[in-house]
Length: 296
Length: 297
Image 1 (tube, each protein chain N blue to C red):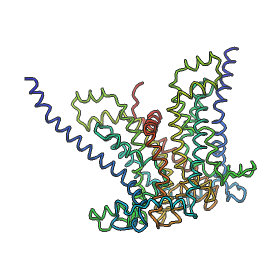
Image 2 (image 1 turned 135 degrees about the horizontal axis):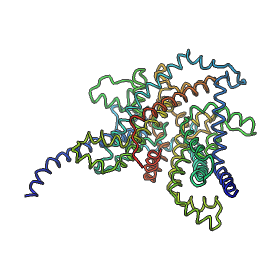
Image 3 (image 1 turned 120 degrees about the horizontal axis):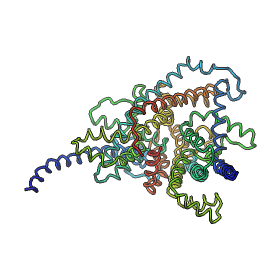
Image 4 (image 1 turned 90 degrees about the horizontal axis):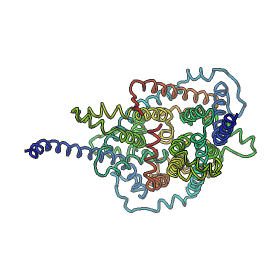
């Protein structure tokens, strides 16, 4: 009897402390999720009440060329920005993990751009990528490239430009890698030294397995992040030229707030969520083969 | 004999080490330069006259140095930079306070009270961290619109959709604070409980004072989140005088339409400035915060 009384009291106490979150979870998450699932089966032009149309939003998506363009662009961007970004960040972290002078300054320089507001970074790069006056093409001309790309105004180069720009903001990934590197037990390196392992082999057989959980964490965050890229293309290219940088989230935004097709936009949101979920699940599944957790 | 053999062996190794250090330095210098040049270039452009800004080849050091660009930003009547700054600061204050306080309360429940269903609820909390905002923005918009029709006060076109949810606990913050609270020994709470302290009293008088480092990490991240947010204000705000700095900067840019690069860069520096100042005041907190969340996540 006493036992259950305490249990009930603890339960009520726990609920009391959790109540703000439980209310928020209901109002700002559970209800919106339910609502968006319902609306994804509706025609809802916002000014008239939603009309149930079954799976028609989803079947419309299959025949919507803009949807496919946006999806392809987003996946192409992810395929370029994600692996390259992960590797560059890891390389930078390995360098920043060595013992040389001025390390804290370098660390600051690498980390800082990732904290800046995305809108401001977009302005910075809009100016750097400027075809005529931009610093990047000035440097390329100095290096002997007579006709440097027009970057953001070229259908061919706009997407690579956004990928290049994304590398400027990988500082937080670097810091997470760095923390992982500092947790690698020193004895393992000493043991590798005794076995006569060189620098590369130490990285391959000691460092990478030890920080594989951190790599995995960064991978999952990168999947979630790159698949919803919005701010930079919205500001820098508006999706152009000729939809070369029209991203999924931009089409979702336009569907909802420009064309007022709330039902279609909700269906798109669900497809995006399932896509992120599927890719994350894929990452988790693959993790069994390459992520090693140290005991304890 | 021994010292000389030692020397012979050590020399090539030391030379290899020297080269390794030099190469590392070179690589780090390159990375550092690539990271800082875009920013320095922005700063330089922001201090130029419009003519100097578009001069080719580009001029590195602005001459004359026009600090007045920054004053002009605040003085132009078509743009509301002063108002936008005030809006952003006001919103940031509301979000940082709410997101820190409410998350701490919830985190205490997760860390220090044992009750049925805690594990499942914590798993739900972690799962919610994976749901991206774009997925919810359409239905949230509709919910805030509905609230506007049914609560007797406007929600869309006000700051409410941007700060009210922050007062109901932010999953990431709750997770981070819970991890920190777990490291505080239970003996401290027990001692306070024996002295007749209530559960809420233990939270405010024992746990919170001991958690200043974690609370400041959470406050910092909340500030960054709200200051840097673009898509939220874009969806919910309507009138130009309600914009935040991030949204204002974008509307400024789209109205300039590729002219006045100097003013655009000055406005960009203005938006970045609070983040830079905060970073240099609390660099340690930033880096440790990111590192620990990454590791424990």
